[in-house]
Amino acid sequence: MESRDHAEVRLAVDLVVLTVREDRLQLLVIVRGNQPYRGRPALPGGFLRENEDLRAAAVRELAEETGLAGRSLVLEQIGAYDAPERDPRGRIVSVGYLAVAPDLPVPTAGSDATGATWARLDTVRGALAFDHDEIVSDALERARTRLEYTTSATDFCAEVFTMGELRQIYEIVWGITLDPRNFSRRILATEGFIEPTGDRRAQVTGRPAALYRRGPASRLNPPMLRPQQGEQ
Image (tube, rainbow, N blue to C red; front, top):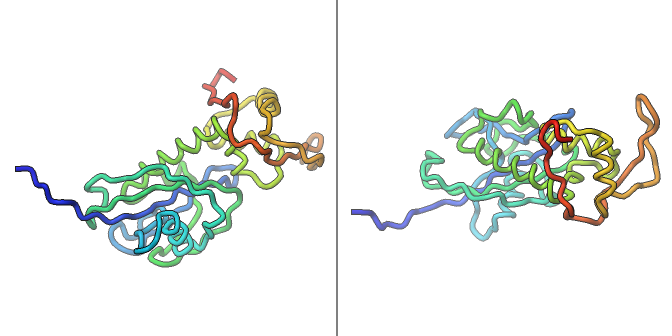
């Protein structure tokens, strides 16, 4: 006979924090200090406390385990992860969050994490504890899709940036190469995406590059869909 007992569930949060460092897409990871998976890389995160909402738990865990302040980050829920056997400690449902930001500082391990670092996404995927590889995959696809329909590429950029730096964000996150002229034409034709500052930055070679800042738009219309290689 099918059991009708109610499941006793604990609620947790896990954070996928992405940034571009050293011309690579990098992921914030911790090294677990406790069982299960002691010594394995994992996403920062932990259990929800009483009288605490999910975002507050995410901000707290980020600070406790990595020393990074999360209050200024835009945290977006990407889904709930509820497979019955996802955690050997019991029935634990985790809510995943995505955050992207430019040039975040080097993390400092704390709480139950024995290490914290930025890791190249292409080297750490496949080695994460629990089902964190699945959470990262979902978050990465969300980040890639956001670049198609929103101005979130500028979230990876400093306050002012060149067109080449903005193009590099698309190339790194999408994992493709874009034609510089076509890219510039599409960006400049999108009203409110970026605004010129009137200043220029000297380059190692060539003419000084024009500097831009984020414009007032949040959505792209029309969207900037990911091209297939050979369609650029």
